[in-house]
Image (tube, rainbow, N blue to C red; front, side, top):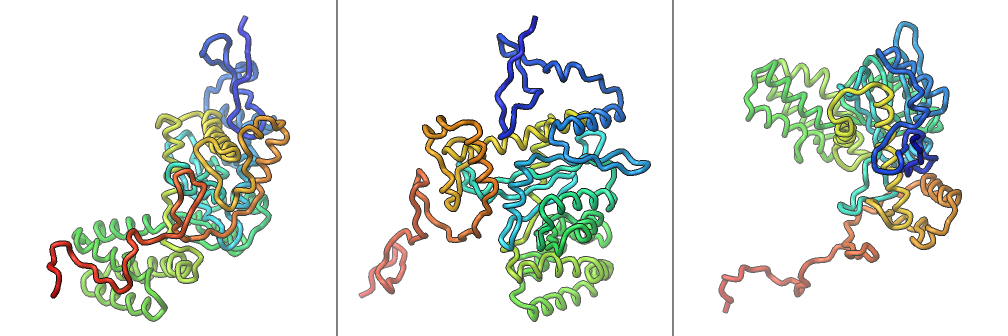
Length: 409
């Protein structure tokens, strides 16, 4: 007879029922509850299994969105994800909530949300890690599907005003964001915009690579249109490009004037000028998270319950590492503004489970302080930092000269 023992959980909550191991030996098997589930013969069985999981309070399925003549959409997130997202993304200095739809993971589309966690930094790179937020499993790319998901999020986040939300140019996402949230700051991925410009010039105009890159640089480069210092410079640079395009690429000129220029001004240039963002925003974080999800699935489509499990596992690992940051272990360390939450390892070991969870939730509920953008030099053990200094302290007004230059007489 097989004896079952629970495996260790990698999240703040109770151990998921599916993490069971046979004893003795390393071989794993499903728990009795999983074994009792019926086999999934088709997509309808998979959706029905997800509905059952939601009714039983399993797998962080928070809502099933049912629409006539459509398969139900599924909203997935944990309490930890929601609380951490709320404190990281709210306010004028909050992180950008990235939204991206990915494909080929299963019978449905997967739209993920991501954000930079400004409470912790990676031990190796000293950069804020990218965390997975709420996820939507859905069956089409229509505005209504996204709108219901965003309305759910907006309600759970407390109807925040001015939330910074970034995406690519997918019209359905942009329209749904605009109508679901209160005065959102919508950002567009400049990487996607550049790629679309290159594609249009190549396919519609037959433009050479050299001319394509020159136009892209004129729009997005360091001295380009979107980095203009003021509105006068912006209008001047735009007029120069418009004149050039009329002569050589009239079809793209019409596209630029009617489609691209309004998007650039509203969703790239204005946020940069007003200081809402400090640099051009890209959707790399969301795409990186989607790639991580595909790797966890071994680049193969999975059934919906398995897909939900993998999504939860990625989030659980992230919050396990965040939990470890409280006592100075794991892949993350606390930001300097969060040091008051740190607990000595020996003290942590003596705490009860409820006290540990209380401290984790206290960190999750703490709103990060606006970042100090000074590029401090940190000591090797991260215990001390100083403002940047010159490598060599030179005499005032000293002239820098090559070693080979002769001394002047």
